[in-house]
Image (cartoon, rainbow, N blue to C red; front, side):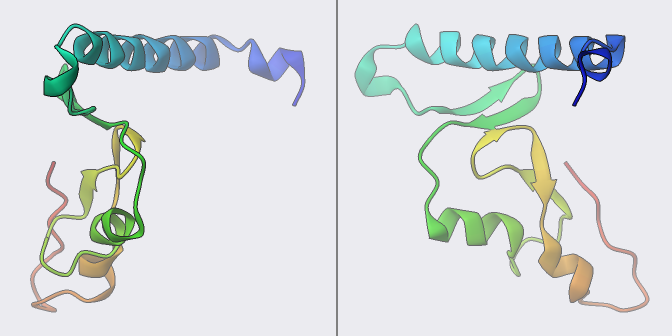
Length: 101
């Protein structure tokens, strides 16, 4: 990757927003007493989870047959990811997949 691509305005803005939200989430957690820190929640409506991911949480995020929503909070990090189960195995073939947030 060249510096010309790295320094594009959209890359700079995207990286700045990402770092701002991550910083705000970490600051929010560090302001709590240690016994109350969960390291997951929402900041400005965007979900975050900074707990060490487990196989069970990863599976429950990207392959959750009990959740009909396609977009779900990430198992680790900030933002959303895809739950592939409802996309590949819709309950009702005539009903569209729920995108939901």
